[in-house]
Figure 1 (spheres, protein in one colour):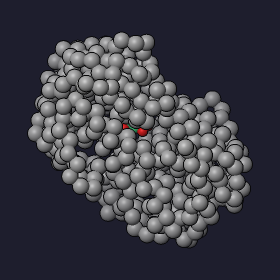
Figure 2 (tube, protein in one colour):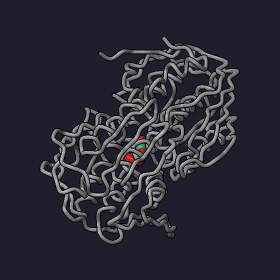
Figure 3 (cartoon, protein in one colour):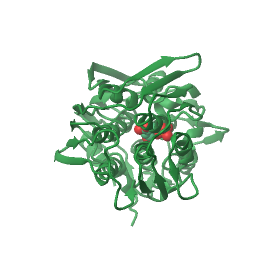
Figure 4 (cartoon, protein in one colour):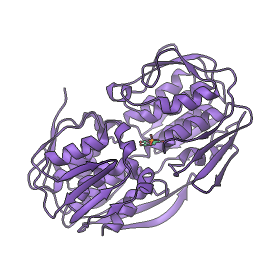
Length: 437
Ligand code: S3P
């Protein structure tokens, strides 16, 4: 039974906190740990439903995954090609990343595995991953593009050179993972840089991988018949989760918060760059490197915001943050135009439509023009509406934050799916002084 929920007017948020571990890095640490030889000890793993789906999938394929304590996990890997056929369908729940990256893993194993997921995941496009993996040797039984699907891995994969038709780190990663199993060099050419955690972590685990910039983007080449060696991974805080705390502190008067140990990989920080352009008082402090990734503490103070034009090229570096940015834009004087948001249509919901509809429901002028979303902001937001989340955690959290600063509380239809990415979201917000009903 879905439970509706509201944020209540809040001010003076303060505190020094951490958010749960980065979701993208958590999935990869489990998967690469399972494909490596030896042990991978992980600290700070995100223990939300999406990542748990990945731990269950690699366990069902024979890897030994042990929970040692909060965020602390040990994966005993099987080596490339060492997995065994699952005896039951692999259930990926709400997680597109888990399903798509694991397609790259199954491609390299000569057995069948049935992939299933929840209602939202079963609506999401899979052809973008299956097409390149098919060129490498993966097959399946049913009509493709959507789960459920029974995949048939190959004894020997073929290396390919593939131009990514969509800027998707999940597609890129699935191909690079399959490339581990293919003799020779597998190449992925991307026009726009997408998050590069796969490249960083595979190199950190010993894969031979090169990145060459070209006129329009970059080529990533991975050497096949690879061997990965397990290595310790400290997962940094998730900048996509920190985005909600950042937004709350900007909007609630008198706030001053610090969010510690957040990933600041430049392929993920478009949201923060945009906010600085809007006039936000955000500083990165104590910048450092951990497990091959840059991290920092983020300090945020309440700020007056001004609307800006967000270029399409920035979209991959903030793709999951547009619902939150759009809600912030409601409080920014003037117009905010966010360009090139086509990929938002195929997330956990059609996020472009869900965001625009949500804003309209709380009396904020918002319109979609082609692939752009335009929001007209002002100092005060009436709020008071009812927002449909469509099983989408980021829509739920974005409108709860908007509600903290609007005149009337906004009712969000369901918050149960927040646990797919951000365990303890409400409690953490409350610890900063935010109020909910
Ligand atoms: C992710 C890539 C992005 C992002 C998702 C996580 C990843 O998806 O939206 O939340 O971990 O690779 P796309 O690759 O489909 O853009």
